[in-house]
Every structure is written in structure tokens, then in C-alpha cells.
Amino acid sequence: MSFEKSRRYSRPVLHPISLPPQSSDSSHDNARAQIGPQIHGDSWVVTTHTFLGTTNRVNPTCWPSYRFHDDPAGIPDNDALHTCYQSESAHSRGPEHEHHIFDENYQDSDEEVPPPPRFAVKRYAPPKTGEGGLTLVVMPGMHVPTETFEPMIESILTETHCSGFKIAEIWSVSMPSSGQTAMVNLPSYLYGNCKDIARDLLLFLTLYLPLHPGQSLPSQLPPRKLQPSNIQPARRNLHVLAHSMGAQSALLIAAHAPDLFASLTLFDPAIIPPGDIGTAFFKIPKDRLAFGFPFHHQDTASLRASLDVNRRTKGWDPRVKQLYAEHGLSPDGKLIAHPRLEWALYYDQETALQCFDRLGDVKAPMNFVVPKRPLAVPLGMLEEIVKGLHGRNKLTVLHGVTHSLCHEKVEECAGVVVGWLMDLRRMREARL
Image (cartoon, rainbow, N blue to C red; front, side, top):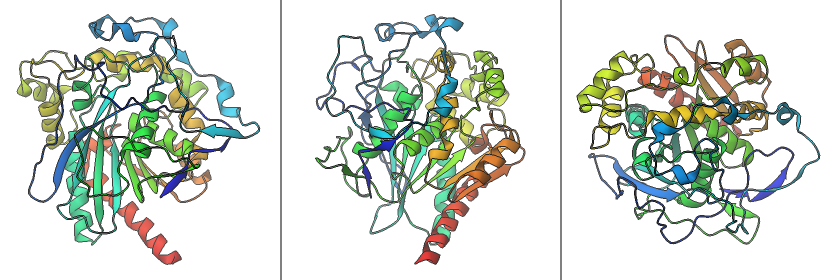
């Protein structure tokens, strides 16, 4: 598999990404944990690794990087700090021009720029990889430990094993201010916008993710070198499972680098139509959009009890609740990430609408999985959009679930994923 480092495109929204420094930096000296490979289970080997995000990034207006050592409870509440959507973004198709994925000549400027964040990512690999098989990349929503997807991963592995379908590896990203990624960064590290999340994940997929499964890897993944030609190699047969803001990032990446993914399964993606719907959505108080957990908990059992009554999590599968409780607290009894960091992401009132605008730019097959009442796009509108998209796309509606559907009906969501992958395989075989 390979992709073009530059291509002609009329409306990019992701700025070119720059490579992080080769040597380890000191910006994470106050991180709360260091990660090394950890092996669990009898059949699949699970290892944890880290990588650095892009160097050129947006400094948060509401919480500049010089505040990253301060208590995030101090992040201000000020509507003047919103980054608002510009309607011209939807109609900005002009003459195509050369757009580069990488900024190979980036140099530090005099402006204050946040340090590149460190990400934690888990690899699930069979003891013997062998030849062939696809790779799954899991991109959760924000402020949810990646381990909460393990029940769905286990169900997918069980179903694919019974059907003779081979998965070579699964990589699951710990998103910003979530799980182990929160632990290896400064406690109040904040993103300037959600597009930088997509840029960091694009960097992982193109330069950190090994080209072939089954390799022995160090704790800190080294980036591959850029090729002198326009063609850059990448992992073949790459299928994405993404939820909420993770799905938003996956869509932006797919529009930006159209040859990278073999398919996308998108669980209620965080996309918002411009116009009246977008205006109404952002009138919802940020406190209603965030989880709203207390910051301090007596112990894991206390957090687990909170999950049973929280309006966003009470319908979760008990296994998911337990994994959240086990991986959501730091040793001092505080949440891994301060709730204000999730709250502050909603200062970005632009990216979710820009992502909606660019659904038509995605070339990879898309499998939308949504509740009867999706996050922001009315179901009838989404049905018409999916019908109008080119290529192989699908919409599945699950009943009796909310925006957290992949944490509520684990086996049903896993079945949708496996059915989709089987359909793609049958179509590919029919063309041969």
C-alpha cells in the first residue's frame, strides 16, 4: 500500500504535518507515567507503545501552552473564545492546487507553539501472524480509555475466527485527554482545535505504524523516513473502527489522504450540518455535552458507581463500565483527565461542520452505524446523504441505543463490523 505525499485538492482543511524531533524532548518531564510493553492474555499478545504528534500545531486561545502546568479548572468560560465556522468552507471548491500532507521544511518560529503531544497506542497481535490478513485501527471518542473497546474487539475476534476471516493486527489509539495518553502528557495539555487530533493520527498512520504486522517494536515507536519521491509506503488493508470525535478524525484523514484506508466503520460520527442545525447544536451548554463526572473519586468502586447513574453512561455494558473504572483513575483518586479539558474542546465550533462538508470527498467505503437519533445529523438527512455518496457505502440504524452505542450493545456493534468486512471481502472476490 502507498499514498501520494502531495496531490491536487481544492479545499484542504488539515495543514501539512511536520515531523517531531528524533530525540526525546523534555516537554513531558511532568507526565504522570512512562509506558513500556505489557503482555496479557494467552492467545493474543497486547503491547503498549507511544508516539509523538506533529510539531506545528495550534495554540489554544482559551488555554495557551504556558498554562499547561496550571490547574485546568481555571480554563475560562468565555463565548468570545469560540472558533466559529465560516460558511465559505462548504463552497470553497476552486481551482485545484498542489497540497502537501507533510511540511518537510518546517522550522520553529518565534511564536509560542505547544509541544507535540505524546500518544499511547495498544497493539493486539496473534502469537503467529503469518501472511495476509487485515489490520483494524480503533479510534475511540474523547475522554474514554481505549480499553473500553476491548469487549467489542474480543467479540470481533471470536466472530472472525469462526468464519475463517483473518485479522493480522489491531491497533487501538488512546485519544487526547483519555486513558494512558492523558497519563503521558502534562495534566492540563489542551488541543487548540480538533483538526490537530486528525493531523496527529494521520502522522501515526503514515510514518509510525509499521508497514508489516508481527514485528518486534520498541516502547517508543520511531517514525519512518519520508521517501524522496511523491509515493510514500503505508500499511496495506487498513480498516478503521471509529466513534464520535475519533470518527470525525477518521473522516478528515480519509478526505485528506484518500488512498490510505480500505474502509471506515463510523459509530455516530461527530459531524454537524451547517446552518440552523449547527447553530442550535452549539447553543447547548458545554456542560450538557460533556460527561460531567466528578473529578475526585474515593476509589475504582466509587467511579464504577458513578457510571451506573450518569446520564451518558448508565446504559453501558457492565464490562465496559468496569474497564472505564479500572483505567479512568490516576493513583491519587482523580480522573485521568480533568473534566474541564473535555468541556474546553467545545470551544471548537468549526471542525465538526467542516468534516460534514467533506463527506463527499471521501473515496474509501464507509459504514455508518448510528442510533435512531444520531448526535447531530437528523436520520432522514443522513439517509439521503449516504444514498448520494459515490462508491460502496452503508447505513445501519441500531434501536434502543444512544450516542454511546458501541459501549451499550457491544455484540451487536461487533456483528455489524464483521458483516461489513465480510461483504467487502465477497465484493472483492467477485471482481477477481
